[in-house]
Structures are given as C-alpha cells and as structure tokens.
Image (tube, rainbow, N blue to C red; front, top):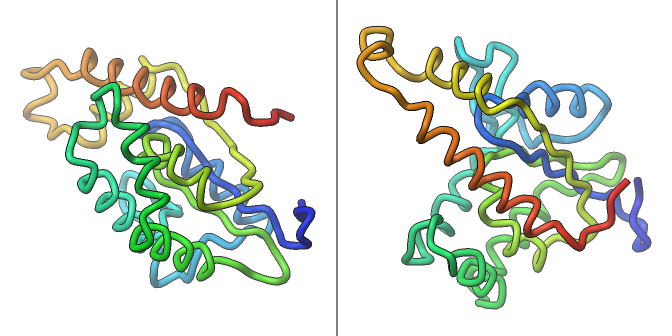
Length: 186
C-alpha cells in the first residue's frame, strides 16, 4: 500500500455514528495501521469498550474547520466553502502538520471520525493517495443503536429521533459518495 512517492498510503475510515467504523478501525489497526499515539486517542467507554480509534487532535481540528466555515453543514455550499479552507495557509499548514504527525516509515496511518465525511473536499486537497474505507449499515439499525447508547433511557420513549438520524445518515452518505464520485475504486 505504498504510494508512488514511496510513502505508506493513509487510510480514512468513513461512516455515520454507530455504523461499525470503530470495529473496522480496530481491525485495520490490528493489521498494523497507526491510529495515533494512545494518549491522543478518544478513550474507550461503555458504548465502545474496545475504543473509538479517533485521534483527538484531528477531531479538534475538524470541529474547528467546520465551525470556521460560517454556514451549517446542511447548506448546499458548505462543501465548496470548506474546500476553500485548504488553500488558506493557516488551515493548510495546520492540516499538513497533523498529517505529518501520523506518518510512520514502517506502516500506514489511519484516521476515523464521522465528521471527516463532511470535510472530504478539504482533505482531498491536503492528503494524497488516501485509501477510503466506508462502512454501510442499515440506517434503521444505526438509529436504534444510537438511541440505545446516547439517549437516556427515561427519554427513549418520549422522543423519536429516528427521522433526524435518517436525514443525518443520508447527509453523511451523500457527502461521502458525492465527494468521492471520481475517486478510484477497488
């Protein structure tokens, strides 16, 4: 999986919350990919006892990047606006430094974070030759899992969040596949 420049190809694991991204990331890490220094990874908890495999500095960067755009991720021009940030030196330099932290001479590196799907147009201008691994779980099952783990039990019968989750699922999938439409597939 080395690139034409002799470097290991980075791996981005993409998918909506509760769709199996942590499980897939764990498999890829067990195969040898570098997820980042252990102390910089989101800690395991009851929802993901094996860990999330989310690199906290990258999570913070993505959250700041999304906030900097000035419009909701649901706005039609969000993807174009976030892509423009890749050409602004401060954002570009920070992103390149984050990616450089991950580089290893002996193995590929991995990033997993659901919100990467919304910022792919940015990352395509920053990181070359990425391998994208995309999880696809039935949105009904993902919504049920999300509700079970993140909605307090006292509220589960009072609030219906399935409709919102289905829209979010669709938004993330359309963002992912729309941005990667011209990407080489294996």
